[in-house]
Length: 128
Image (tube, rainbow, N blue to C red; front, top):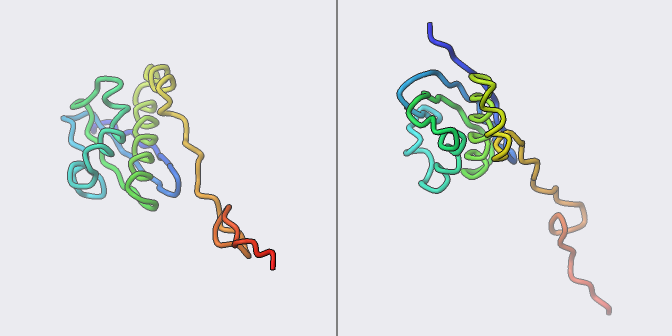
């Protein structure tokens, strides 16, 4: 049986579960091809770890993403893909780390505060 490597990636409120195997470069996201699921620019962003290592066409990627929007899901896919490649081969750590693909982007939407219209916005001050 072929080796399957698993990793989880997160970005904003999106979570991606990634399985990679040695293969021909097929990439499925939520049972659809990556071309169907993501737009061109976001797709390039999501597959950066493979292009940085020059491994396009060497791994089959199967993943499920939940939560967030398209950008968050692409970021989660990128994070998870980098972590899965690391499980497959530890020698990829240095190039992936130097490009910043192993770092979880911790920026989240700040919560709305009570008595205010948003996280930072205040109602207009009235002198009289």
